Image (cartoon, rainbow, N blue to C red):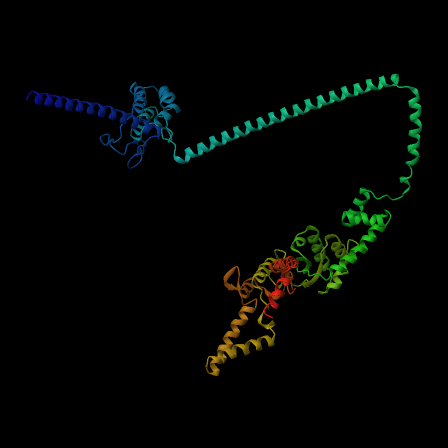
Length: 553
């Protein structure tokens, strides 16, 4: 029984101690929580009201609260209490006008009120405004009001810009310091080298002064004949009139544009004569141009030039797209297009006989072939406009060119229609330009298709008429849907602009030229087959088969 009472007594003591400990811990935790809440609210700025604004203005221009004192829902922290006490002490002391203006309405007081929670902030602002109203002092609307998010962001941007400017200034100063140190280092090295050179010169001079005293006179006299014999043989190489030197080779290369080795060979062949070497290279270039004329030239550029209501478009071909992007080749294309403005019609032979910079375009082409090493041809040209119409063009990636001629409108409209033609490639401008044999052939094909369906002849005729109408809309420019605005046709666009189509020309680089296509897989297979045949030759396989064939006999 005694043990039982002792156990109960200990158990009650333990429960009492546990309850006391829990209550103390709860009190400490509550205190820490309240302190942390106050610090957190101050760290994140004043809290916003649950509803309405922090304060309002009544009809008498006096700030009033939108809630009564009994509806306060926010706890005032320790920091807010200190600010409140400091400001209320001044207000309760019946301050004078100077105190109100210099202390209560100061920037420091405004900053302190901004840090308070919204409930306390509006109360303090109201009291300060009441004190200012006693002396007829005006209070700024932003007094005690914390900045908005936009104002804070703007302030941060300004401060960031100032920091960035200071950082750049410091960086620039550091760079200047490094540059100055580098220049000082270079200067010191130069001075050191100069001193070393001066010292070496002094030592050399001392050695030179000591040599005549030690050297015997007979050796000097013996050395003189040797010096006299060498100049006697020196005039021999100077006898040639035009020596081939790197300078002369460079001059010939700048004049002709040929390669270094070609210029050297030409100068050696012509005994150093620049004019004769240039003529030699010219003849050699003609031979190269004739040899390369049979090569396929399906790459190149479309060039356009216009002047005084006339526009011309030329196609200049080369063998590879690498040359098609070369600046020398592109310059020649522009030169050909400019010269084509002086040619009547679309005759390429007349164009190539035109002289530019004292040399015909054909001679320039041959020299370009000799310089670049590829076949270059001016294939075709097209001319539009006579001065009485509006002409414009468009070139897409140097590969497709279009010229458009209109009655009325402007050059910008010509360019827009040229872009449409580049994309859609209509064969004809209007239905009147479609040849009769093309329409008859299409009608026959459509009639045969309609008759196979088993329909009556009168129905077939109507079907063919509708399909021919649709066919003409597809192949004629004016009836196609405009690429920039699918809701209208090109004809409708021309009608809106008060213009009428006269015609157009379209050229594409390499159009109609059969390009040579290399089958690399076949070449590799062919090479592999040749190698396998070569490897199979030394193997004595036929010798092994002969005994097998004779064995049955």
